[in-house]
Length: 117
Length: 113
Image (cartoon, rainbow over all chains, first blue to last red):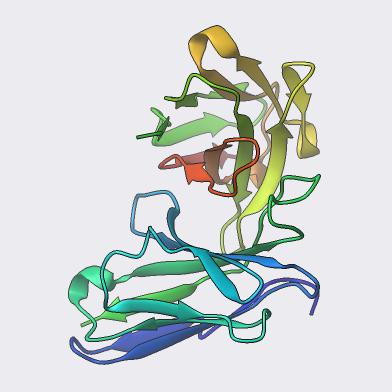
C-alpha cells in the first residue's frame, strides 16, 4: 500500500506478557519513528531510526521497551513484561530522509492500540 | 525542556463559526512549526507547516496559521468551519537540522451541523 502500515491495530494482553508491534513504512523512507499516545495526550517520542540503526532511543521509558529495524524497512517495537501503564496507542511514522527532507512531513500509520489488563 | 502548549483541549462550534486554536512553544531559537490533524478513525496527517518566510501560512481545507515570533505562538485559524472539520488538532515543533518532533496535547474540535 501507499501508506504506513501498522499491525495489529488492536492488541489486548495480560500484565506480564510479551508484545510485538509491527510497522511497515512507506517504501523508500529511510527515517522511521515510534511515538506513544496516551489518552488525552499528544504523541510522545520513543525512538528514531535512520536506516537500520537506532539514532535516538532516548524516549524509550525503560529497558522493557526495545525496537529493531534489521533491514532498514520494517520495524518491530517489543515490550517485555507488560504493565497496565503501557496501555496506549503506539504510532509509527516514516519520512523520506534523515531530516524529514524538504517537505518536513512525517507520514503516520493508524497506530496499534495496546490494552494491558 | 522544549514543550508545546495547546490551551484549548475541547472546542465546540457551530458550522460557519470562525476557529482559532492556540499553540505556544517554549524554545526561543529557530523552529519549524506544524499543525497535524487526526479525523475520527484516521491517521495523523499534515495540515500545514512553517519553515521560514511569510509568517502567515496557508494549508489544506482553508486552514491557515500565523507564526508570531515575539509571542512564541503558531495559532491555527479557519474563517468558517464545516461539520467535516470535526477532528483532533495537534501542534508540533522541530528544530531545523534535527529530527525530533515535539507535539502538544491536542485540541479536540467538534463542529455541530
